[in-house]
Length: 231
Image 1 (tube, rainbow, N blue to C red):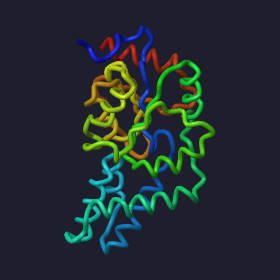
Image 2: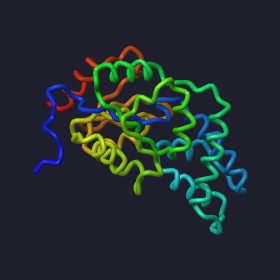
Image 3: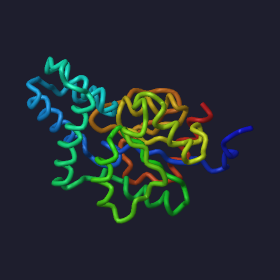
């Protein structure tokens, strides 16, 4: 027996949002925190590494920081928590910049009754720090990096979001800005809309690119998603 309901005539059945770089422009905060932690650990960091790790699991970033510092004595979990500490401290002081068109699209999706999930590599306390600034939390489900065993680019985050919403992954639209995140959505079987920020994800099947979400409404997303499904 199919555990999911039959797909509705109107797709997407749900929109699954990335957080860092897609909903909020937090990438500069992550980069600054990584540089600060690398210095704290006695290692080195560079922009290539920072960009390569965009969208990946935080534990992988911690392991890279440890390798760069030559500190095999360090616990990756503890280093991850320290990185989160630094990011949260910066977020609390920052004037958050919501990505162009993101809040408007969230509002339209809510009005149309389209379920939304937030699917992020960031830990829950990072998300909480940012989301409390929204007048209302618009997400039906939140999957943080510390909610899953395998982070992006593994499909688990997006598969988990679809399962919790009770929809089929292939009926979902993922909004992503990173290579690791887009690959996660693709591996989960979703259609992926790429809105590049710090990095440029490559073209792939069931994937389309947008320069920005500004001025992009539900009707356009439906049309672009439908075009990918008939390729």
